[in-house]
Image (cartoon, rainbow, N blue to C red; front, side, top):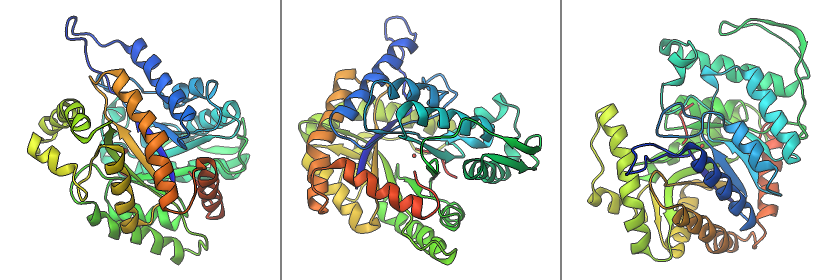
Length: 370
């Protein structure tokens, strides 16, 4: 199993000034990616948002900076909101990232968990589904052929044009991120695309039928090799269970309750948070042993190929985030690999998933529902 981290680059204002340090947060984010590489994690993902509480609106730029300072970790968006972007530019940016990183780039395509990018770039939310479907089709055609002829409703037609540069990888990995919509899982499976499932609340087992829909659709479409699945969830690894919980609750509750106020659902209190940390809860907050047990429990439900921890930030001390990444790489990942019979070599596990995805015709969260 591949094990990694993803982040939205959460920001919190300085209590004294009320202002957020964008430059400092980017520096911290690059340090987090470098550490994840050094401790043997397989993947680091960076999300795209266009809000004041997140620092990253251009994942490919951040990942390119990280590529020059890392050696083996795969670098992915988590997600790229392709519905409100131009797939030609997305392809070119990640092909360039692939060249800079020596073949470690991935795109995680999604519709996004927020809507700010649609009015920002002049798109109508009423076209939410149609935009994603059409632009995903264009992105997949771009990676399949150097020259392309294409026509749709969302952008100007392309008449036998070459798109450059071309990536190091023969097939630039593309994952599809979903939040729980069955039609999204079926679409990803039918296309032979790996699926990243964002589980940020509720009982994880209720997502098992979604994974089966994805696999059934892939088989029905004639994709002979298993198509990889990733499970993506909030979390923080601490030296002790209590320390992890006490550190994680304030920033996670602040973020979730801010969204709750925007969307009109129930806020998170400490009791709900503590319930989410149990074996059958959604959040991965605890000691290394607890995180190992929870990953293995969910593997018995999903048989997934990748696990990404959405590292809780937004006001948490950078040192605590770094310690969580260190523990995930040095204690959690080796124990999970041993338990699943993969040994301690993270790179070998990453290669296995890549090969499976390429055989299916594609390889690769929060990320957003697709």
